[in-house]
Image (cartoon, rainbow, N blue to C red; front, side, top):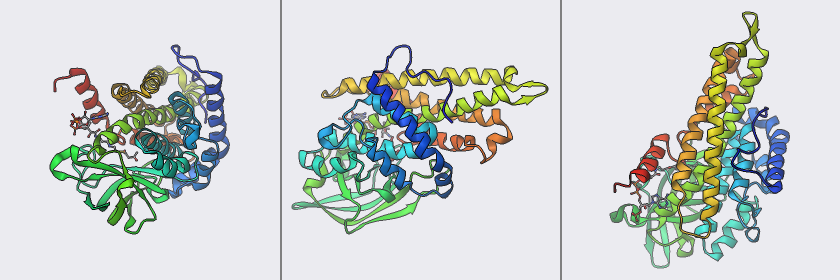
Length: 395
Ligand code: CAA
Protein backbone atom coordinates (compact mmCIF):
# COMPACT_ATOMS: atom_id res chain seq x y z
CA UNK A 1 0.00 0.00 0.00
CA UNK A 2 2.03 2.99 -1.24
CA UNK A 3 1.36 6.44 0.20
CA UNK A 4 -0.63 8.55 -2.22
CA UNK A 5 0.50 11.92 -1.15
CA UNK A 6 4.06 11.98 0.11
CA UNK A 7 6.44 14.42 -1.52
CA UNK A 8 9.53 12.89 -3.07
CA UNK A 9 11.56 15.48 -1.19
CA UNK A 10 10.96 18.18 1.38
CA UNK A 11 11.10 21.84 0.44
CA UNK A 12 14.73 22.19 1.49
CA UNK A 13 16.02 19.44 -0.73
CA UNK A 14 15.85 18.51 -4.37
CA UNK A 15 16.62 14.93 -5.20
CA UNK A 16 19.02 14.20 -8.03
CA UNK A 17 18.01 12.02 -10.96
CA UNK A 18 20.16 9.23 -9.50
CA UNK A 19 18.35 9.47 -6.15
CA UNK A 20 14.95 9.39 -7.82
CA UNK A 21 15.92 6.36 -9.89
CA UNK A 22 17.09 4.45 -6.83
CA UNK A 23 13.97 5.47 -4.90
CA UNK A 24 11.79 4.21 -7.75
CA UNK A 25 13.79 0.98 -8.05
CA UNK A 26 13.36 0.31 -4.32
CA UNK A 27 9.64 1.16 -4.51
CA UNK A 28 9.14 -1.22 -7.46
CA UNK A 29 11.16 -3.97 -5.82
CA UNK A 30 9.20 -3.65 -2.57
CA UNK A 31 5.86 -3.77 -4.39
CA UNK A 32 6.77 -6.63 -6.73
CA UNK A 33 8.98 -8.85 -4.58
CA UNK A 34 8.25 -8.10 -0.92
CA UNK A 35 4.58 -7.16 -0.82
CA UNK A 36 3.40 -10.62 -1.98
CA UNK A 37 5.31 -12.43 0.79
CA UNK A 38 5.32 -9.90 3.66
CA UNK A 39 2.26 -11.19 5.53
CA UNK A 40 3.34 -14.83 5.15
CA UNK A 41 6.83 -14.21 6.57
CA UNK A 42 5.37 -12.08 9.35
CA UNK A 43 3.13 -14.98 10.31
CA UNK A 44 5.82 -17.69 10.13
CA UNK A 45 8.67 -15.59 11.53
CA UNK A 46 11.00 -17.24 9.00
CA UNK A 47 13.97 -15.33 7.57
CA UNK A 48 13.14 -14.26 3.98
CA UNK A 49 16.45 -15.42 2.50
CA UNK A 50 15.28 -15.42 -1.10
CA UNK A 51 14.14 -11.78 -1.16
CA UNK A 52 17.19 -10.71 0.86
CA UNK A 53 19.46 -12.32 -1.76
CA UNK A 54 17.55 -10.44 -4.46
CA UNK A 55 18.01 -7.22 -2.49
CA UNK A 56 21.73 -7.96 -2.59
CA UNK A 57 21.63 -8.36 -6.36
CA UNK A 58 19.86 -4.99 -6.59
CA UNK A 59 22.72 -3.38 -4.63
CA UNK A 60 20.50 -2.62 -1.61
CA UNK A 61 22.70 -4.43 0.93
CA UNK A 62 25.69 -2.09 0.62
CA UNK A 63 24.34 1.16 -0.78
CA UNK A 64 26.95 3.49 0.69
CA UNK A 65 29.90 1.15 0.41
CA UNK A 66 32.33 2.19 -2.30
CA UNK A 67 32.30 0.10 -5.46
CA UNK A 68 35.84 -1.15 -4.86
CA UNK A 69 34.47 -3.00 -1.81
CA UNK A 70 31.41 -4.47 -3.50
CA UNK A 71 28.92 -1.68 -2.70
CA UNK A 72 26.76 0.61 -4.81
CA UNK A 73 28.97 3.65 -4.07
CA UNK A 74 26.06 5.98 -3.33
CA UNK A 75 25.50 8.46 -0.48
CA UNK A 76 23.59 8.42 2.81
CA UNK A 77 20.60 10.15 1.25
CA UNK A 78 20.36 7.35 -1.31
CA UNK A 79 20.48 4.81 1.52
CA UNK A 80 17.64 6.36 3.53
CA UNK A 81 15.47 6.85 0.44
CA UNK A 82 15.79 3.19 -0.52
CA UNK A 83 15.31 1.94 3.03
CA UNK A 84 12.20 4.08 3.50
CA UNK A 85 10.65 2.53 0.37
CA UNK A 86 11.38 -1.03 1.54
CA UNK A 87 9.91 -0.25 4.97
CA UNK A 88 6.73 1.22 3.52
CA UNK A 89 5.98 -2.33 2.43
CA UNK A 90 7.71 -4.41 5.11
CA UNK A 91 9.73 -3.16 8.07
CA UNK A 92 11.20 -6.63 8.71
CA UNK A 93 13.03 -6.65 5.38
CA UNK A 94 14.06 -3.10 6.27
CA UNK A 95 15.63 -4.22 9.56
CA UNK A 96 17.72 -6.86 7.79
CA UNK A 97 18.83 -4.27 5.24
CA UNK A 98 19.61 -1.59 7.81
CA UNK A 99 21.77 -3.80 10.05
CA UNK A 100 23.71 -5.02 7.04
CA UNK A 101 24.22 -1.49 5.65
CA UNK A 102 24.55 0.99 8.46
CA UNK A 103 25.90 -1.18 11.24
CA UNK A 104 28.03 -3.94 9.69
CA UNK A 105 29.21 -2.38 6.40
CA UNK A 106 29.60 1.14 7.75
CA UNK A 107 31.71 -0.06 10.68
CA UNK A 108 33.97 -2.11 8.42
CA UNK A 109 34.46 0.60 5.84
CA UNK A 110 35.23 3.18 8.52
CA UNK A 111 37.28 1.15 10.99
CA UNK A 112 38.41 -1.99 9.15
CA UNK A 113 41.88 -2.79 7.84
CA UNK A 114 42.33 -3.39 4.11
CA UNK A 115 42.54 -7.14 4.79
CA UNK A 116 39.29 -7.07 6.82
CA UNK A 117 37.53 -5.10 4.09
CA UNK A 118 38.53 -7.62 1.45
CA UNK A 119 37.56 -10.58 3.59
CA UNK A 120 34.31 -9.34 5.18
CA UNK A 121 33.09 -6.14 3.55
CA UNK A 122 33.20 -7.27 -0.08
CA UNK A 123 30.93 -10.31 0.37
CA UNK A 124 28.51 -8.58 2.74
CA UNK A 125 28.19 -5.31 0.77
CA UNK A 126 27.62 -7.22 -2.46
CA UNK A 127 24.87 -9.29 -0.84
CA UNK A 128 26.66 -12.64 -1.11
CA UNK A 129 26.94 -12.88 2.66
CA UNK A 130 24.99 -11.40 5.58
CA UNK A 131 26.41 -9.36 8.45
CA UNK A 132 25.22 -8.82 12.03
CA UNK A 133 26.10 -6.46 14.90
CA UNK A 134 26.13 -7.66 18.48
CA UNK A 135 26.39 -5.21 21.38
CA UNK A 136 23.51 -6.13 23.70
CA UNK A 137 23.66 -8.82 26.40
CA UNK A 138 20.94 -10.40 28.54
CA UNK A 139 21.88 -8.05 31.41
CA UNK A 140 22.92 -4.97 29.40
CA UNK A 141 20.77 -3.05 26.94
CA UNK A 142 20.67 0.72 27.39
CA UNK A 143 23.68 0.52 29.72
CA UNK A 144 25.66 -0.91 26.85
CA UNK A 145 29.12 -0.74 28.44
CA UNK A 146 28.11 -2.96 31.34
CA UNK A 147 28.87 -6.28 29.64
CA UNK A 148 29.80 -9.70 31.03
CA UNK A 149 31.19 -11.40 27.93
CA UNK A 150 34.96 -11.58 27.75
CA UNK A 151 37.82 -11.79 25.25
CA UNK A 152 41.09 -12.85 26.85
CA UNK A 153 44.33 -12.29 24.94
CA UNK A 154 46.64 -15.33 24.80
CA UNK A 155 49.80 -14.61 22.78
CA UNK A 156 48.72 -14.19 19.16
CA UNK A 157 45.01 -14.83 19.66
CA UNK A 158 41.96 -14.04 21.81
CA UNK A 159 39.57 -16.49 23.48
CA UNK A 160 35.95 -15.31 23.53
CA UNK A 161 33.30 -16.42 26.00
CA UNK A 162 29.84 -15.14 26.82
CA UNK A 163 26.27 -14.73 25.73
CA UNK A 164 24.99 -11.92 23.55
CA UNK A 165 21.31 -11.09 23.12
CA UNK A 166 18.93 -9.60 20.59
CA UNK A 167 21.24 -10.08 17.64
CA UNK A 168 19.36 -9.10 14.49
CA UNK A 169 20.21 -11.32 11.49
CA UNK A 170 22.15 -13.74 13.73
CA UNK A 171 20.48 -16.96 12.52
CA UNK A 172 21.30 -16.03 8.91
CA UNK A 173 24.59 -14.19 9.42
CA UNK A 174 27.93 -15.32 8.03
CA UNK A 175 29.86 -12.88 10.20
CA UNK A 176 28.89 -11.14 13.45
CA UNK A 177 30.59 -7.99 14.75
CA UNK A 178 30.84 -8.74 18.46
CA UNK A 179 31.60 -6.16 21.15
CA UNK A 180 33.09 -7.67 24.28
CA UNK A 181 35.27 -6.87 27.31
CA UNK A 182 39.02 -7.26 26.93
CA UNK A 183 39.82 -5.34 30.15
CA UNK A 184 36.93 -5.26 32.66
CA UNK A 185 38.79 -2.89 35.03
CA UNK A 186 38.67 -0.12 32.46
CA UNK A 187 34.88 0.09 32.02
CA UNK A 188 33.89 1.27 28.56
CA UNK A 189 37.57 1.77 27.70
CA UNK A 190 38.05 -1.98 28.18
CA UNK A 191 35.69 -2.98 25.36
CA UNK A 192 36.96 -4.23 21.98
CA UNK A 193 35.25 -5.24 18.74
CA UNK A 194 35.77 -8.55 16.90
CA UNK A 195 34.69 -10.08 13.61
CA UNK A 196 33.40 -13.56 14.35
CA UNK A 197 32.46 -16.02 11.61
CA UNK A 198 29.36 -17.98 12.50
CA UNK A 199 30.91 -21.30 11.38
CA UNK A 200 33.75 -21.10 13.92
CA UNK A 201 33.98 -23.86 16.56
CA UNK A 202 32.41 -22.51 19.77
CA UNK A 203 29.88 -20.28 18.00
CA UNK A 204 26.23 -21.25 18.43
CA UNK A 205 22.81 -19.68 18.41
CA UNK A 206 21.01 -19.34 21.72
CA UNK A 207 17.37 -18.57 22.39
CA UNK A 208 15.45 -17.21 19.39
CA UNK A 209 13.68 -14.00 20.41
CA UNK A 210 9.90 -14.48 19.98
CA UNK A 211 9.00 -10.98 18.84
CA UNK A 212 5.85 -8.84 18.66
CA UNK A 213 6.80 -7.29 15.32
CA UNK A 214 9.43 -7.26 12.55
CA UNK A 215 8.99 -11.00 12.91
CA UNK A 216 10.66 -12.01 9.65
CA UNK A 217 13.95 -10.40 10.69
CA UNK A 218 15.42 -13.32 12.58
CA UNK A 219 16.75 -12.32 16.00
CA UNK A 220 18.42 -14.56 18.54
CA UNK A 221 20.98 -14.83 21.28
CA UNK A 222 24.44 -16.00 20.34
CA UNK A 223 26.63 -18.12 22.57
CA UNK A 224 30.43 -17.80 22.47
CA UNK A 225 32.27 -20.75 23.98
CA UNK A 226 36.07 -20.67 23.92
CA UNK A 227 36.14 -19.20 20.43
CA UNK A 228 39.74 -18.71 19.32
CA UNK A 229 40.27 -15.64 17.18
CA UNK A 230 43.50 -14.34 15.69
CA UNK A 231 44.42 -10.76 16.61
CA UNK A 232 43.72 -9.83 12.99
CA UNK A 233 39.99 -10.42 13.68
CA UNK A 234 39.89 -7.45 16.06
CA UNK A 235 38.21 -4.38 14.56
CA UNK A 236 40.06 -1.24 15.62
CA UNK A 237 42.45 -1.05 18.56
CA UNK A 238 42.03 -2.89 21.83
CA UNK A 239 39.80 -0.74 24.08
CA UNK A 240 38.32 1.18 21.14
CA UNK A 241 35.23 -1.03 20.87
CA UNK A 242 32.78 1.17 22.77
CA UNK A 243 33.53 4.22 20.67
CA UNK A 244 33.21 2.15 17.50
CA UNK A 245 29.88 0.78 18.74
CA UNK A 246 28.58 4.28 19.51
CA UNK A 247 29.85 5.86 16.30
CA UNK A 248 28.26 3.09 14.27
CA UNK A 249 24.97 3.43 16.15
CA UNK A 250 24.86 7.08 15.03
CA UNK A 251 24.70 5.77 11.46
CA UNK A 252 22.27 3.01 12.43
CA UNK A 253 19.89 5.47 14.07
CA UNK A 254 19.48 7.37 10.80
CA UNK A 255 18.47 4.08 9.21
CA UNK A 256 15.90 3.46 11.96
CA UNK A 257 14.50 6.95 11.30
CA UNK A 258 14.02 5.93 7.65
CA UNK A 259 12.38 2.69 8.71
CA UNK A 260 10.05 4.45 11.13
CA UNK A 261 9.15 7.01 8.48
CA UNK A 262 8.31 4.27 5.98
CA UNK A 263 5.94 2.55 8.44
CA UNK A 264 4.32 5.88 9.37
CA UNK A 265 3.75 6.79 5.72
CA UNK A 266 2.01 3.52 4.96
CA UNK A 267 -0.16 3.79 8.07
CA UNK A 268 -1.06 7.31 7.01
CA UNK A 269 -1.76 6.45 3.36
CA UNK A 270 -4.08 3.62 4.34
CA UNK A 271 -5.89 5.87 6.82
CA UNK A 272 -6.33 8.64 4.30
CA UNK A 273 -7.82 6.27 1.78
CA UNK A 274 -10.11 4.69 4.37
CA UNK A 275 -11.29 8.11 5.59
CA UNK A 276 -12.22 9.05 2.01
CA UNK A 277 -14.14 5.83 1.36
CA UNK A 278 -15.66 4.53 4.60
CA UNK A 279 -19.06 5.92 5.51
CA UNK A 280 -20.74 6.23 8.90
CA UNK A 281 -23.80 8.17 9.97
CA UNK A 282 -24.46 9.09 6.33
CA UNK A 283 -21.09 10.64 5.48
CA UNK A 284 -17.46 9.80 4.79
CA UNK A 285 -15.65 9.33 8.08
CA UNK A 286 -13.02 11.88 6.92
CA UNK A 287 -15.76 14.49 7.20
CA UNK A 288 -15.80 14.04 10.96
CA UNK A 289 -13.35 16.39 12.61
CA UNK A 290 -12.35 13.63 15.04
CA UNK A 291 -10.88 11.68 12.12
CA UNK A 292 -9.72 14.62 9.99
CA UNK A 293 -7.62 16.12 12.80
CA UNK A 294 -5.90 12.79 13.39
CA UNK A 295 -4.89 12.81 9.72
CA UNK A 296 -3.60 16.39 10.02
CA UNK A 297 -1.40 15.45 12.97
CA UNK A 298 -0.12 12.32 11.22
CA UNK A 299 0.82 14.23 8.07
CA UNK A 300 2.54 17.04 9.97
CA UNK A 301 4.61 14.66 12.11
CA UNK A 302 5.57 12.62 9.04
CA UNK A 303 6.88 15.66 7.16
CA UNK A 304 8.78 16.90 10.23
CA UNK A 305 10.37 13.44 10.57
CA UNK A 306 11.33 13.48 6.91
CA UNK A 307 13.16 16.79 7.29
CA UNK A 308 15.00 15.60 10.39
CA UNK A 309 15.98 12.42 8.55
CA UNK A 310 17.28 14.42 5.57
CA UNK A 311 19.19 16.71 7.92
CA UNK A 312 20.81 13.72 9.61
CA UNK A 313 21.64 12.04 6.29
CA UNK A 314 23.28 15.22 5.01
CA UNK A 315 25.20 15.67 8.27
CA UNK A 316 26.50 12.12 8.03
CA UNK A 317 27.49 12.63 4.42
CA UNK A 318 29.34 15.85 5.32
CA UNK A 319 31.19 14.02 8.10
CA UNK A 320 32.77 11.45 5.77
CA UNK A 321 36.55 11.60 5.78
CA UNK A 322 36.52 13.76 8.95
CA UNK A 323 36.20 13.11 12.70
CA UNK A 324 33.07 15.22 12.89
CA UNK A 325 30.18 13.61 14.73
CA UNK A 326 26.53 13.76 13.66
CA UNK A 327 25.22 12.24 16.89
CA UNK A 328 22.75 15.06 17.62
CA UNK A 329 21.17 14.99 14.16
CA UNK A 330 20.94 11.18 14.17
CA UNK A 331 19.35 10.96 17.62
CA UNK A 332 16.82 13.73 16.87
CA UNK A 333 15.82 12.05 13.60
CA UNK A 334 15.47 8.64 15.25
CA UNK A 335 13.54 9.98 18.25
CA UNK A 336 11.06 11.99 16.22
CA UNK A 337 10.52 9.46 13.46
CA UNK A 338 10.07 6.50 15.79
CA UNK A 339 7.53 8.31 17.97
CA UNK A 340 5.80 9.47 14.79
CA UNK A 341 5.71 5.90 13.57
CA UNK A 342 4.06 4.64 16.74
CA UNK A 343 1.67 7.60 16.76
CA UNK A 344 0.64 7.05 13.14
CA UNK A 345 0.26 3.28 13.49
CA UNK A 346 -1.84 3.78 16.62
CA UNK A 347 -4.08 6.34 14.89
CA UNK A 348 -4.35 4.10 11.82
CA UNK A 349 -5.70 1.20 13.90
CA UNK A 350 -8.19 3.55 15.55
CA UNK A 351 -9.35 5.08 12.25
CA UNK A 352 -9.84 1.62 10.73
CA UNK A 353 -11.72 0.38 13.80
CA UNK A 354 -12.29 -3.38 13.67
CA UNK A 355 -10.53 -3.64 10.32
CA UNK A 356 -7.44 -2.05 11.87
CA UNK A 357 -7.39 -4.88 14.39
CA UNK A 358 -7.84 -7.59 11.77
CA UNK A 359 -5.09 -9.55 10.05
CA UNK A 360 -6.96 -9.05 6.77
CA UNK A 361 -5.21 -5.67 6.47
CA UNK A 362 -1.54 -4.82 7.16
CA UNK A 363 -2.52 -2.06 9.65
CA UNK A 364 -2.06 -4.28 12.72
CA UNK A 365 1.38 -5.27 11.35
CA UNK A 366 2.37 -1.60 11.07
CA UNK A 367 1.28 -1.19 14.70
CA UNK A 368 3.38 -4.16 15.86
CA UNK A 369 6.37 -3.21 13.69
CA UNK A 370 6.38 0.48 14.67
CA UNK A 371 6.95 -0.26 18.37
CA UNK A 372 10.48 -1.60 17.94
CA UNK A 373 11.66 1.67 16.40
CA UNK A 374 11.17 3.31 19.82
CA UNK A 375 13.28 0.57 21.43
CA UNK A 376 16.19 -0.77 19.37
CA UNK A 377 19.38 1.07 18.49
CA UNK A 378 18.69 3.16 21.61
CA UNK A 379 15.30 3.67 23.25
CA UNK A 380 13.51 7.02 23.06
CA UNK A 381 14.76 7.67 26.60
CA UNK A 382 18.37 7.07 25.49
CA UNK A 383 17.89 9.41 22.51
CA UNK A 384 16.60 12.12 24.89
CA UNK A 385 19.61 11.49 27.13
CA UNK A 386 22.03 11.81 24.20
CA UNK A 387 20.35 14.95 22.83
CA UNK A 388 20.05 16.72 26.17
CA UNK A 389 23.63 15.87 27.21
CA UNK A 390 24.95 17.32 23.96
CA UNK A 391 22.81 20.42 24.30
CA UNK A 392 23.51 21.05 27.98
CA UNK A 393 27.22 20.24 27.70
CA UNK A 394 27.49 20.08 31.51
CA UNK A 395 29.99 17.23 31.83
N1 CAA B 1 30.49 8.58 18.83
C1 CAA B 1 31.76 8.45 19.27
N2 CAA B 1 32.06 8.33 20.58
C2 CAA B 1 31.05 8.35 21.46
C3 CAA B 1 29.71 8.47 21.07
C4 CAA B 1 29.44 8.60 19.67
N3 CAA B 1 28.19 8.72 19.24
N4 CAA B 1 28.92 8.45 22.15
C5 CAA B 1 29.72 8.34 23.21
N5 CAA B 1 31.01 8.27 22.80
C6 CAA B 1 32.21 8.17 23.62
C7 CAA B 1 32.24 9.34 24.61
O1 CAA B 1 32.87 10.47 24.03
C8 CAA B 1 33.05 8.76 25.75
O2 CAA B 1 34.42 8.82 25.42
P1 CAA B 1 35.54 9.23 26.52
O3 CAA B 1 35.57 8.14 27.51
O4 CAA B 1 36.81 9.33 25.73
O5 CAA B 1 35.10 10.54 27.10
C9 CAA B 1 32.65 7.30 25.74
O6 CAA B 1 32.12 7.02 24.45
C10 CAA B 1 31.60 6.96 26.79
O7 CAA B 1 30.47 7.78 26.55
P2 CAA B 1 29.44 8.10 27.69
O8 CAA B 1 30.17 8.59 28.90
O9 CAA B 1 28.39 8.99 27.12
O10 CAA B 1 28.84 6.66 28.00
P3 CAA B 1 27.62 6.28 28.93
O11 CAA B 1 27.88 4.89 29.37
O12 CAA B 1 27.31 7.33 29.93
O13 CAA B 1 26.32 6.32 27.98
C11 CAA B 1 24.90 5.79 26.19
C12 CAA B 1 26.31 6.03 26.70
C13 CAA B 1 24.51 6.96 25.32
C14 CAA B 1 23.84 5.62 27.26
C15 CAA B 1 25.10 4.50 25.40
O14 CAA B 1 25.39 3.44 26.27
C16 CAA B 1 23.93 4.13 24.52
O15 CAA B 1 23.78 4.67 23.42
N6 CAA B 1 23.12 3.16 24.98
C17 CAA B 1 22.12 2.58 24.12
C18 CAA B 1 22.69 1.35 23.47
C19 CAA B 1 21.96 0.99 22.23
O16 CAA B 1 21.59 1.82 21.41
N7 CAA B 1 21.79 -0.31 22.04
C20 CAA B 1 21.20 -0.80 20.86
C21 CAA B 1 21.92 -2.05 20.46
S1 CAA B 1 21.98 -2.39 18.77
C22 CAA B 1 20.46 -3.00 18.37
O17 CAA B 1 19.47 -2.41 18.68
C23 CAA B 1 20.42 -4.33 17.74
C24 CAA B 1 20.11 -4.42 16.32
O18 CAA B 1 20.53 -5.39 15.76
C25 CAA B 1 19.26 -3.50 15.56
